[in-house]
Image 1 (cartoon, helix red, strand yellow):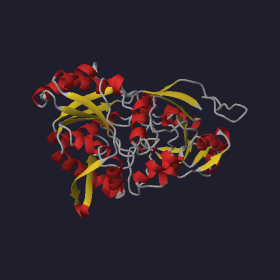
Image 2 (cartoon, rainbow, N blue to C red):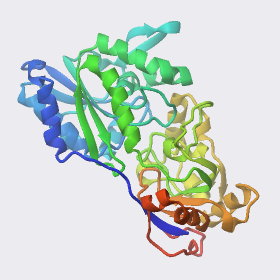
Image 3 (spheres, helix red, strand yellow):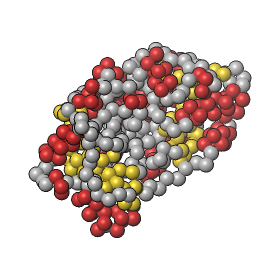
Image 4 (cartoon, rainbow, N blue to C red):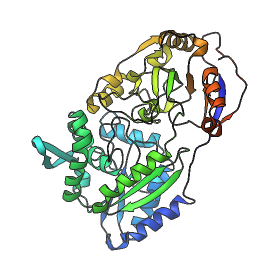
Length: 414
């Protein structure tokens, strides 16, 4: 294997705090908040860079205008679908009353605020529906389950995040129809029924730095989110090879992707018909471990072909199954074939990927689907790099070819 460094276009905002203040000023937040108004600010379950500082900045701006800000978890069923569990998720992200400068009110109670076609109810967090105003803060990025004009962003946070477990389960139960049709439709209803003042959209670059900050009026959210999603897709780091025999993923976790490992990177979607033409075609995926920050939630492990006994031993089945069932799928929580150690898992994947000499296999080894600047490629792929001008320009060679090293227990040296 040869270590390489990928050159990735990654514009970023010089000062995200100043950018947030300026965006809120441009949208005349001062005219939307009166003294004494109770203002809810959403906090999701994704590990957005500088998340606590972003929320603290919004809290400060609201308080300057005489508002009384507080946070509400907007994360559907995450945290085991309990109010205490959702507070624990926020704590794991560094979001506490102390770090953001405001209380956090967590509840799984919801109100029904309307119905979609087929008599599908639309739910929203009861605290949010009865407050004076709401600022929705969220990241816009490609979704791991489906491809459309609206994927993961403010509208999903409104429809599913603020819908809590009941709203999330309702939309997820319709699977593809829920994703493609009900998320935007439910968000439109909620924006008409509850007092959303603004949305604050964050787009990250491939290095998890803030690339774009955009404040949006409710009526601007849908159209502008489509444009921001296009930008987010352009900035997404990808593996620059179309055909991969074996993809070795050292760790998966909820802190890395909502689905454990980003399907936009692996190309392994679980819903039939969902594809991304820019993603690679992978023969076998090997998952070696769960991240510490996922706290046992192993959603996405079902998209691997082979894993290890170590990874399986860390699974919190309650958290994993609650996440999978609310999502409306059992596929992502199925346990793949698991081997005693990393060496056996990788060797098995090489043996079953296709009839090929393992020395000629296209193998890529990544730490996780978030960190794609440095990774390892096999000699066969190295030859492709040296013979392709575009790949040679994109990838810097960092090492001589060397065999993968394992300790006496068969654990891959990291």
